[in-house]
Image (cartoon, rainbow, N blue to C red; front, side, top):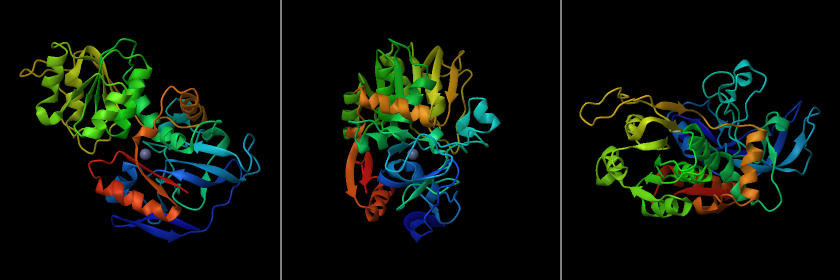
Length: 349
Ligand SMILES: [Zn+2]
C-alpha cells in the first residue's frame, strides 16, 4: 500500500509498505479523513521517529478487518480514533496514566512507535478499548478535529480545573488554544482572556467564547493580564502555546492559589518563579498540572457526545481542505510552511 511517512534526516515522503493484518484485539481501517498535526511536522524536524514510520494520528476510518478477539466492532463500522491508543494492560494505565502506559508519552503510539493513519490502510490496536463509533449526524471532519484538537484543548481546561464563573487565561490561539477557549466556556468560565495576535485566530477566539484578547506583540503579557484583572490574576491559566518561558508566564498570571493547566510541549523551559521581586508574583500556592491528552474509547465517546448534542463545533478551525490520499503531502507541506491564515487543514480520502 501507499503511505506518507517519515523517511529520515528531517524528510517526509511517500513509501510502499505491506498492508497491515488484523489479529487478536486489533482492527484494520481504511482512513476516510485525516489531518496533519503540528506534532507530525515537529517529529519529522527533530528526527525522533524510526525511518519509514507512517505519519498521522488524527483521523477517522472505516473498519475493513477485525481480529478474532474483537467484540464490539465489525467490518463497515465508521470509527474515530484518538491519537492516544495505549496499551491498557500496564501498571501506569492502571494508575490512571494511560498516556504514559510504558514510559513518558508512550500512549500515543500512532505515528510514534507504530504506523500512523496517512496510508491506504492503518492498524488500530485494541479497537474495543480505543475507538468509538461515530454517531449519526456527526460529520467526519468534526470527528477528526475532536480526536486531538478538541481533546487536547478541553484537557487543558480540565487540567486547569476551570470552575463556573472563573476568570481564565488561554495562552495561544492556534487550534488547540482555540479548543481550550471552547473547553473553558463548556466548563462554565466567566471571563476568558485569550492571548494571541493573528487576526483570523482572534476572530475564532471570540467565536469560541473569549471575552478579552491580549496581543503579546503589544507588550509583556503578564503585565497586560495583571492590568486587566486589577492585579488579581486569573483563577486558571491554560498554557496552549507560547515560547520556552510560557510556563513561567502562566504561573505569573495565575492568582494566589490558582491553577495552571499545561498542554504545551517544551523542549527547554525557563525558571518558575517562587518569588519574583520585580513584578511581585511567584508560585504562591499555585497548582501546576500538565499532560498529554487522554485516549481510549470512553474519552473518544465523550468527545463525540459533545459534537452530537451541539455543545461545540470544531469545524470552523478548518481553513484548508484537500481531497485524496495524494493530497496528504500538500496538507503536510502547508503545516510546515505555516502561512499566517492557516489554522487547520483536513484531507478527505
Ligand atoms: Zn496531533
